[in-house]
Every structure is written in C-alpha cells, then in structure tokens.
Length: 174
Image (cartoon, rainbow, N blue to C red; front, side, top):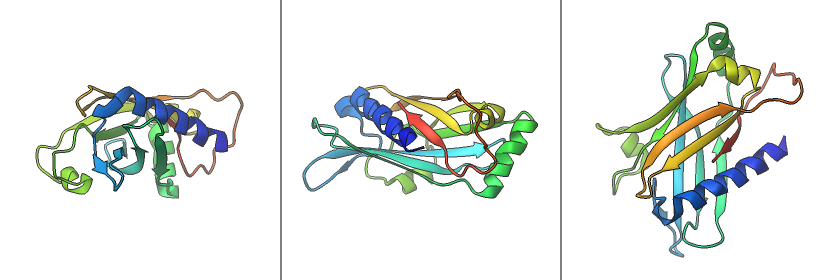
C-alpha cells in the first residue's frame, strides 16, 4: 500500500509545478521565504454535512526543491458504513475545496466567513466502493492563485481486494 502514497506524492508534485509561482491558495511564507500551498479537502456522503477529508501541502513553490506532504483523516466505521449504504442507494460522494483564500484570513476563518466560494465535484458512491476507495483527484488553477477546477475519478483495481474494513482513501492528487 506504500506505493499509493508515493504515487500520490509524485502526482501532487505535478500539481505544484502546474500552479507555478501563482499557487497561493493558502499562502504561507516561512523563515527562509519559501512559500507553500495548502489545499483543505472536504467531503460529504449523499446530502450529509461536509467534513475535512485531508490536507495537501506543497512547500518551496519558488525553488527547484519542492517538498510535499499529504495527510488525511482516517474513515470511521460509521463513515465507511455510510459510504457503503450510499452506494447501495445510488447516492453521490461529494468533494470540495475553497477556490481562494482572502488575504489576511486563515483557512479556518475563511471557511466560516460569509461569501466563501468553493469548487466542488461529485462521483457515485458505488464507484468509490468498487474501486476500494482508490481515487484520482485533479486540481486546476488559473495562474492567479484561484482553484478553478476539481475532479475526482476512481482508479481501476487490477485484482479483487477484500474491502471490508478500509480506513483511509488511497488518492492521487494532480
């Protein structure tokens, strides 16, 4: 399963290169002046409330050495049951991220401010279950620090895997 994380890291590195220096969705400058991009992904099952799925960060967007980190929240047994139930009833799995942070606001402040704008996508819950929660997430930027597109697709599984107790998504972000 470690190879999924490596693939996710490599594809997310492609994201940082495609955004270039304008990737300032959530901009942070460290002591060394290196900038970072932070994308908070939120998900919902069916008509449920959105909750945080995970955070992807890229550091040193201006240099040739880009560091990437990806953290995601493990699925609870209740969430897993909810996804399976949604698959049976033909419901959708929804994913979103903020399109742009306002200057001077933290991610949390922006998430709770009126007028916030999200970019979102959906996929059938059945597709996620059939793929054993393996998905490909593509984030598209406009070169000015705005996220203008978000897509999610599933990855085909070359073999049958026992999926009775997955706890985490196996994603690739591009």
